[in-house]
Amino acid sequence: MSRPFKPYPFSPRHYEGVVPHLTNGRDPRGRSVAIVGGGPVGMTLALALARQGVRSVLIEADDGVCTGSRAICISRRSLEIFKRLGVVQGFLEKGLPWTGGRSFYRDTEVFRFAMHQDEEQSLPPMINIAQYQIEQLLLDEVQRHADLIDICWQTRVTGIEQKPAGQGTDGTEGAGGATLTLRTGDTAWRMHADWVVACDGGRSTIREALGLKLTGTTYEGRYVIVDIELNSTRPTERLAYFDPPSNPGSTVLVHKQPDNVWRIDYQLRDDEDPESAVQPENVMPRVQSVLDSMGETGDWSPIWITVYKANALTLERFRHGSVLFAGDAAHLVPIFGVRGANSGIDDADNLGWKLACVVNGVASPHLLDSYSDERVYAARENLSYGMKSTEFMAPPSFAFDLMRTAVLSLAERHAAVRPLINPRQTHAIAYVQSPLNDASTRAAGAFNKGPAPGTVLPECRLKRMDPDASADIHLTDLLEPCFTALRFTAGANAQQDTAWQQLRDSLAKQGIPFKDVTLVRSATADAVRPHVMDHTGRLHDMLDATPGTVYLIRPDGHVLARWRDGSAAAAQHAIRMALTI
Ligand SMILES: Cc1cc2nc3c(=O)[nH]c(=O)nc-3n(C[C@H](O)[C@H](O)[C@H](O)COP(=O)(O)OP(=O)(O)OC[C@H]3O[C@@H](n4cnc5c(N)ncnc54)[C@H](O)[C@@H]3O)c2cc1C
Image (cartoon, rainbow, N blue to C red; front, side, top):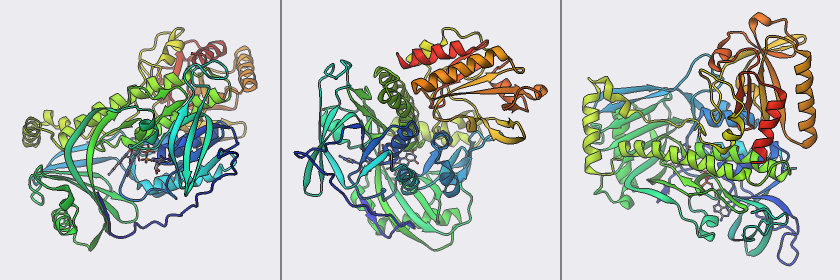
């Protein structure tokens, strides 16, 4: 139920649907990877595969990027992923960074939250940017990789048939691939791909065609989502108003977006009809009273009005033979806590390197089961946070409503209840029980703290010391979509350096993406160059690192293994175990 009023300040490009040359109604090209759905998740996956040199075809039913009001908040974790994929700059230029928010009960401020932010960070904890802008930035990068990514616009997948498990050409489950049925304009055609990734959104055709069901909770509470144009210099923060004088009995959320667009979400009462709720005569006075209460006196006009209902649903498994699911096709997360697109981007990052290793013949297809294990676990974590937020933002029963009223009434005077108002914004999920961790932690020595296998690294300022210059960098600048060994040392060690050189050569020959980085404390600045200097000692402290410590990082930035006394041989073993799992 959506009502467009006027165009967003954005000029979308429209692309034609072109049918390839067919042989007997079939695309004669053998495709390694077909990605169904060119939303944020499908495009991130195509880029992740391209960074590993893997070709893919993106199949998109529409003729360009999305329209309407969808995601606006992109997390630091997603920005880290975009940084590794080489696409973050546009997000930082266009997005509005913010670090926290305020909640009000009636007309009193009852809670303030701040997301983690300090001088060590290279990326803001969150930016606001409209989903059409997110998709445009990704599409621009996809088009720069036209040698590796084909796009079929205006092409809808209508069916899929995959060979039964175990029927693959090499005898492994899923290696037989799947045949897609497609429609471009009036032309129906078929395409075969070794691997199909369903990124076709919440109403996934592929999920339906395979008879798979999402399970979980569907909420009845509805929100009206209004995007308006308003020129205001108010800072970017998350504003939540509970039972405000402007909209008694309702909850209102306000977010600033780029280009003078504002998002105003308000909860409908149970007795309100959603159909009439989106009528302008009902929306305009409510938005006006919200703006009045905020002291916003400028002219404004509506751009888009829609109704939202929260779902907290997931598939049980994200791999079904040669078909993989990612993003909204795999799970539907409530918007409160902004985990939808952000978690889908994380899916794509996790799947990208694994699928590339399988396609490039350096990993067993079983590695893809770890994608399912890790990301189903992440989906369940995200759902549990998302459900808590939803129950607070739109109480599903009288009991939840009562509890919320009690919390809000007490919050002004009692600090202990305030965390219950916290919106629990999205964060990177640690894969604490990943099967990949098992393979790699056996040889690990004792650490008192620091990111354990399965966890992502904290950010830190560092200095890159090259033979004739030094540069200020961050830890995330060292992470590329490859395995990365962070070697903490006290100085040059010829024997070890030779072993690491041999490992680099051996992995390069096998086509396994890898690099190692030598890190020293400032006191050992005379160590062999090039190296990276932890001039504040903070990274050593956060990672509990001493000379000899090695952290082995996966291409998606999660720790694969760590050793107090690491070696090239141990790293080689851990990578081999992960790829042959
Ligand atoms: C009001 C609202 C606010 C939100 N706010 C946030 C937020 O702040 N942060 C956040 O992280 N998330 C947010 N979300 C969620 C976010 O929009 C989704 O999680 C995200 O769009 C999922 O991306 P996706 O690529 O998986 O699916 P989609 O974006 O739905 O993309 C799927 C693509 O597949 C195409 N497609 C569908 N069927 C077929 C087919 N059969 N053949 C070919 N192509 C097909 C579609 O045209 C579409 O382009 C919000 C959602 C809403 C509704």
